[in-house]
Image (tube, rainbow, N blue to C red; front, top):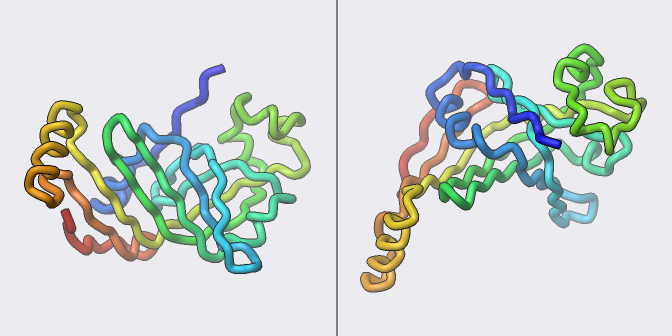
Length: 180
């Protein structure tokens, strides 16, 4: 069974457009929340959509412990083949709008929700990003290999790509800067 790729709506700011471009081919992320005892818990989540405001949408079970711990959360996207890494800090919200659930429904979710979009414990997790850190290295394996070799000889990272941050994503993004 083939997964439906994440749907990405047209983004409203250059910063959100940049984040969308970085994660467009990376549908599975790791959602990290803070447990009641202060420890971190991570679990894989399959992104269904990035809406025009930059919010990311996932299916979730309302009985899951993560539902109570979405006040502070992080999403991490990784594409090893392209050396792209994105970390989004924000918060999550539970949405039970049946129309939205039906619009995003795909048969891929049926093993977790056997009653389809009418499954009683099915909800949407809306992740609202507040800030983002990203690392985007050259995707050519030859370029990366040469950069690695030069870095070893030089004793410091050389040509490792772009690293930067975007702040204030949910209330108008502001580019913080390139920290490559």
